[in-house]
Each structure stands twice: as structure tokens, then as C-alpha cells.
Figure 1 (tube, rainbow, N blue to C red):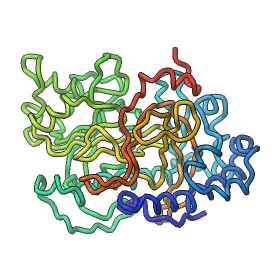
Figure 2 (tube, rainbow, N blue to C red; figure 1 turned 60 degrees about the horizontal axis):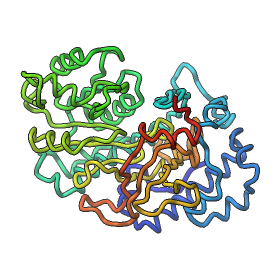
Figure 3 (cartoon, rainbow, N blue to C red; figure 1 turned 30 degrees about the horizontal axis):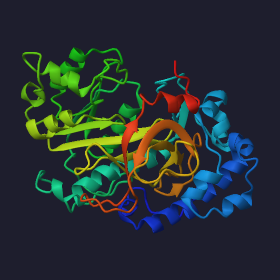
Figure 4 (cartoon, rainbow, N blue to C red; figure 1 turned 180 degrees about the vertical axis):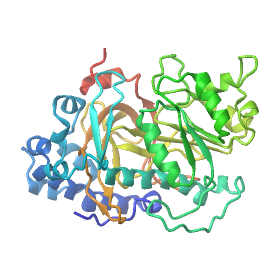
Length: 410
């Protein structure tokens, strides 16, 4: 089932009139994926028993989709086998020896981790979408002009990318735990953009071990969780831990002094980053490119930062959709109102570059339990995008929301 939508690497998703973008999402993605799930995916055949095909076909807005289509919660994920969320033919066509699927466990920050399965087509679409957020910066964001010397007009014939970026030849160290989904998706993304990506040797490697690896590899960029004031970080070695390693007296931040004077790229994902750390990296250390992505294991990257809003995330659209439900669950949250995030996986991409329905496990109106605010859609940003921004996240701290929707807060 091919989808009549622009390529997921197309900047149209970032700049189209919101009314037109929402129409395409609803008419060309959501309705067809919902009908397929109702007919073919075991969990949704039961979950949508009270929703007729005509009701799905007559959906007129994303607001109506969020209200009419029953949400999926962490309880559903925890109490059903992963295959219940997959069409039977997908499972039958799985080739165990060729890696047709990527398998991951959710983080389980407030409860028991659950298995998540993506198809290779899902992974390809996620990569195209996430790389678009990076490519957009270098080719549309005026504040980055002049910071890098690169061929802005270069065209590369490749299924993953269409534009050159200054990341060609960069050497990036992945400091998230070796089995963490963030290292996996960034390894695919950054390799597709011409980087060399270096993995930490194991989940148990110490901060000092990882620091020495970064020095040995002579990296000029790092992917790491930003910081952990609680000292309970389980995702990997944090940026502030690296900064302390690089400070001779054990106090203050001196990242690029001993590590690498040509340190130019910092990537982080899904967690809030403090204003103090951002100012140190950008102003004190003069690192020209600092990029964050937001997402969940179930749907992976769904939004990214820009130079004008380095602590907020522009929605990306394409293979995914993010909405915010009111805390009382009665309708969508108003712009800038705290709500529960709903994520949906809407598309994947074949090896031939054709956009098609999702593969692996289907997640539609999936309630992550995360709280956040969305800015008003369609307001132009100085970076060139006009999409809503996700901000004010209350993730691991948002225990009430996690518990209400099935993640057991212990």
C-alpha cells in the first residue's frame, strides 16, 4: 500500500501551509493506515471493534482522530504479545537471518520495559526524517551561514540524502549505552550523512574509559545524554561527566581544551538540556553545532531543535505524528497547554524510496505518558520552519501521567 505523500527527506514537511500538511496527513496517511490496522492487525481488530470503517473514512480533522479513535496505552503494550501489533503477513515474511526487523526494549523508566519491533522500512523512514532536520539547518537556517565551509549546492544521489552538509567526514562518538536505541538510530543517521560513528565498547564502560576512547579516536563530535542532576542516569555517559573529566581541577567545564581543539558537533536526544550547559557549549566553548532530537522508542525521532530554539523541538512530520491530549483527556490541548503526548507511526520507506504503510508494530494514538506543551502550529520560526514546537517536557518526573496510562511507577 503506497502512500501519496512527499518524500520524508522533503523540506515540504517543515514549511508547507499547516492546513495543507494536516490534510495530507489525514487523507493520505492516517485514514488508510487506520483502515489497514482495523482489518489486518490483531490488536486493532479488537481495539477498533466499536469504530466502523465509515467512521474512519469520514474523519475530518486531526482533532477528530484524537477524539474518536481509541488511544493505545502502556497497559495495552504490556499485556499483549508484540505480534498482536503486527500484521500476520509481516510476521510471516520476516527473515531471521537478514535482519528484516530492528528489535528494542522500551526504557522502562517507571515500569517494566516492553519489546518494540520496527521494520527495516520503518528504520529507513526514521533516518530520512531525522536527517532532514539536520539538513534543513545547514541549508535553510540563516544563523548557521558562515559558520561552516561546505558545498551548499552539492547534490548526492543516495536514497538517504539529497544535500551535502558539513558533517561529511566528521568523527562522532556515541556515548549512550551500547544497546540504547539512541545510539542505533544516530549511528544510521550520521553514517548516512557521511560521518564516522564510533560506538562505546560496552554498556558498563566507565566515564574515564569512554573519555579515553574519544581521545584515541580523535573525534570532533559526541552524542550523549546532556546531564543528570539526580545522579541516577542509566542511558549512558552524560555531557557534564565528560566535561568534568576534561577539567584539570575537577571543577568547571573545559570540554574542547584537552579532548580536541576542533570539537564542533554535540548531539543529544529526548531529555531536557539546561540553559547553563547550552550557554557553556555555545558561548564559552564556541561549538558551532548543537542538535537535539525528541522521540520515543515506539516511534523514534519525531522532532528536533533549531538554532533559535535549542531547548525546544520542532515537530518533523512525515513517518510520524505527535499530538497533545488535554490532561482530562477531553479533546486536544490548546497551544502552550500542558497535555499528554499522543504519537502515531504513519509510514515507512522501501529500498526503492517509495513511501508505504508502517511495518513492524503499529502504534496509533499511542499515549506515551509523557507530558509536554505544543506551540501554535503554523507560526513561522526564524530558522525557516513553521511547525509546532514541543517544550516543557515532563518525562521521567511525570510519574502521575505514566501511572495513569499503564506504566507502573515503583
